[in-house]
Image (cartoon, rainbow, N blue to C red; front, side, top):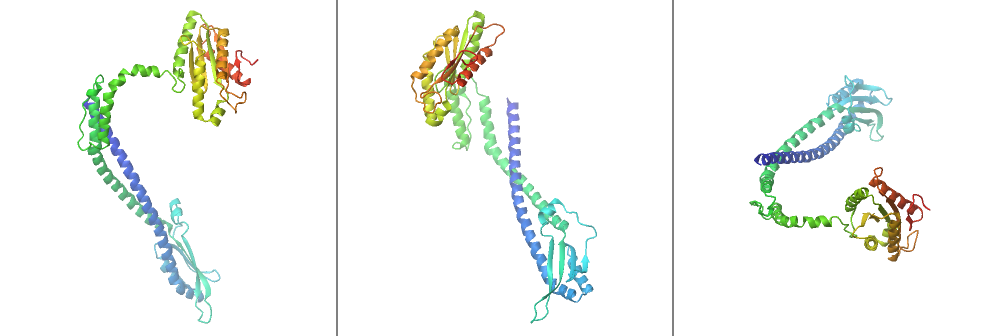
Amino acid sequence: MTHNISASKGRLTLKQALLTLLIAIVISLVAGAVELFGYVNSMREDIQQRTTQQLAIINGAAAEAAFQLNPDLAHQIAYGLFSNSEIAQVTIQDDFGRALAEFYPDSPPHPTWLSKRLFGDILHHEMLLNYYMGSSMPDAIVGEIQIALDQGYLTERFLARGYLVVGSSIFEAFLLSSVVIAFFHFFITRPLLKVHSAITQTDPAQPGKWPKPTLRGHKNDELGHLVESLDHLLNEFQVGLEQRDHLHQLSQYDGLTGVANRRYFDSFFAQQWQWAKRAQQPLSVIFIDIDNFKEFNDHYGHAMGDDTLRAVAKALNLCVDPQRDLLARYGGEEFVCVLPGKNHAEAIHVANCLQSAVLSLAIPHAFSSTHTHLTASMGVSSMLPDKSMSADDLLKCADQRLYHAKRGGRNRIQTSERPA
């Protein structure tokens, strides 16, 4: 017993710890992702703003170099930009598109999906070079400066920030989960294990005398209510044991119609088949299906449909011998009659009674395709069991005849394999 309790404690504590840690990590990672998303947005804005400012600052000098076609000055300006770690390429052109100065990296960049995703749309910048011609004349466009940012450098900056955020998130997750695990262990896990120990020590023959645990600090919370509920449940369990047989009897009947349910039918039919085989007596089955019942439910409502099923079951039950025969609800709007010892002619007589019983109810069904009132279709089958037959053969035969009755126009009794 002690070993089982210890094992349960270990499993519960481990599951609790793993779940808490997982939740803490997920929350921390989500928070980190939100932080990184905000960081990359601010980083992009800062890069674009800083690049635009740099181009604006050197615009005048670059324009002077382009206007004078001075490659030395252009080279100095381009080199000053290229020395910035963020910039991978600089080109200064005159107004004819000729390069006055160009700087390229030694090896071409190899963009990754991450760098494309983060910075692919802000890598290239261009600015026209405007030369001041005097107060009386408009500025002249004398060339263009083009720069390309180093996506590898930018990505490394982002990843460095990402590693820091993820590392701190995981550390926070472990710290948070440790606090939560300790709290849950002392205030929830230990009391639950105490309740578990009390339950395992309870004598099944005397459940009302279980060693009810006292949980300090939990009198008015959910754990306290759990103990009180268990105490009430175990005290009532003895009464439940005495009612078990009665409940078992009730479980054999359909709750809506009051006739036998499918479970009891299966058991009863199997018993009667074996009896008929041993006694060499006939066994008959009648499948009954209320015609167009879906349309009835759709137009009159399910409450009216339930009332109708109850009325039909009561009327059908009057046609069978309660001492020998069985009427059961087979499912939905379908019923089945088992008639031990009755041959085919006697079964047809019962079927006629069942059909008349449904019609005698005179339940209006304005949406039926066969009659102005509620009707039923039936399939009748009888057998004298032998070794070559099975109980399923009898049921399949009756079911097929019900199918033919419905296809033949409904509101009829089918006694042969094909409609007449």
